[in-house]
Length: 182
Image (cartoon, rainbow, N blue to C red; front, side):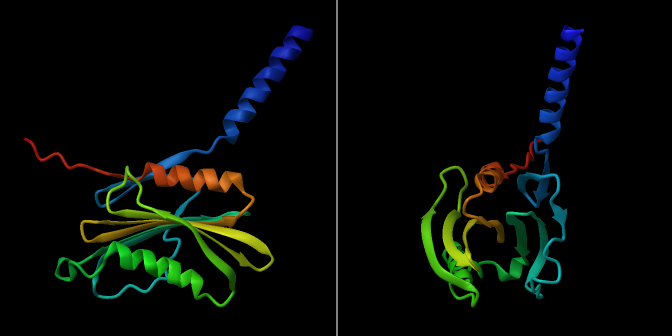
């Protein structure tokens, strides 16, 4: 009876570990693919982001969790508006938006770098106090084919799980090469 109980206990532990692992789904935004957690919903920022007649396509995904808010925003501009966005301007808009927010205190950019594996992109990590808690804001800004991709997470500075999740999402960003050979 002890062997059966031990095997049953091991099986229960294995099944509970498997059920706790985060499942991902891949979304394609034009010719960019990104792996996001399954609980992200489409249209996460609908109604909060202004879309004007320069934009050909706009899509957002995201989720609000106990310790963090994740967003993926993709905006493709109409061909006639080619060149109106730049990587430097997009990066500065993210930083300045946080720096100038009335509720954010002690804003600091902790790091900014151009990732080697993602062309035309910037990764920025900043910290600030939003209320009593120290908060991190990590973002990837990528310019590609007259479009901008922004992957962002605002999370509790003590949350290693959110730090890992946003890093995994950023690492998953890739350009899909179209195969035109017939």
